[in-house]
Length: 438
Ligand SMILES: Cc1cc2nc3c(=O)[nH]c(=O)nc-3n(C[C@H](O)[C@H](O)[C@H](O)COP(=O)(O)OP(=O)(O)OC[C@H]3O[C@@H](n4cnc5c(N)ncnc54)[C@H](O)[C@@H]3O)c2cc1C
Image 1 (tube, rainbow, N blue to C red):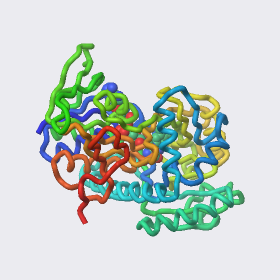
Image 2: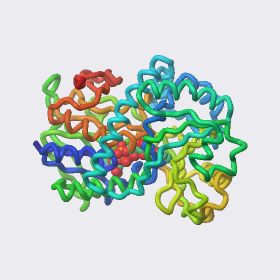
Image 3: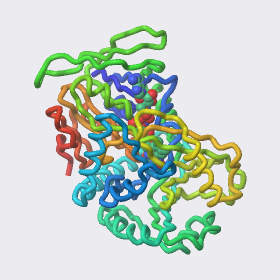
Image 4: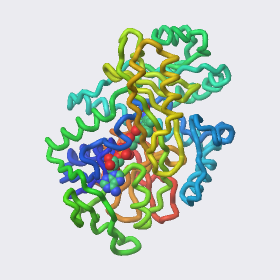
């Protein structure tokens, strides 16, 4: 079968890899000159199964209110006269109940755990080098109350099979000695030895190279302008995609099936063919510093809970990422947010890096209100979704790619997850459409 994958970020590339291995003839289309040039370019680098708690949780509404209008807030909602943003916001609030949060955590842990195993298998098979560290993820708290509240979340994760251990401040410093200078400020932490970290750009470009070697065709500098549908009711399907190719020519490309993996930009294209995704861009920042003193820079991937920053050692670089701004599709760098990241990193590891030459970056997380991605079918028989991975696209990427390849091939994926089934355009929540293997 011929399959066109729209998007060459981590999600589209992983989909292409597994589709090709399932025996399909695969073409990937992306508007950039290479893979992983947008959100999959410089993220936090964590493969973080143990911190699958979505932003939508019972404590979120109050925090959001507190943060409204604060330029350096970890999560900032800039209200706009935009119907999608308001609808998304209302759906986000509905996902904040304890019952919805528990449901969403189960879904995210299921696909994330499956994905980590899939990533490990891809790594072993392909030998892709991506500054991977398998030293676990250490989450540290500087606020007693936040630490106390984390105990229940850690317990839930353990019940779901994640070995997330609660640790004392002394143990935090034993696990990552680079935190010694702030020992007195640490209230405690939790550590998951099975979590990992690595460079998403290196991984995705490495996988894209392996895809090409295996026969996948990539068409870069090619913008998708429209999905073309035909038929109605149960017979509705995609007849082709309209693109503007690298020479500026309009073309129509055709395949038997189509996988939509355009990150935040999946929403408008899907909407035009009646597939209504609740997907909104959540702008995040990262800063990358050259490590000057390797002995003083952390090696274990960290999460600084108080500042909502993740910190990953990528070879001789330190990547620090975080913050979220819901403010449309702009990727503009806000200097206040950039400086806040450098200030905090310098405070944590004063001598470790060259802080005079930071590389700042922003990316748009494709956010669903629940942080559960859309993976599965649509009401158009040959249009499949693999999008909306929000804060955890690296964590969930390989597993999502493998699962969508199974679904496109008419097989049942190996993971018990609420795959999307959009029988009608008003169904926005993921429903179980593909019975999971027991
Ligand atoms: C600051 C930050 C930190 C993060 N940290 C982590 C982390 O530590 N761990 C983790 O698991 N996740 C993290 N994430 C999330 C993760 O990076 C994303 O979920 C993931 O990169 C999304 O991948 P994607 O393939 O869906 O989207 P993208 O990487 O954006 O890929 C979509 C592709 O579609 C292409 N495209 C879009 N529109 C068109 C069009 N019309 N025509 C042709 N091509 C088009 C784009 O060029 C792009 O290549 C972070 C994100 C941010 C922003």
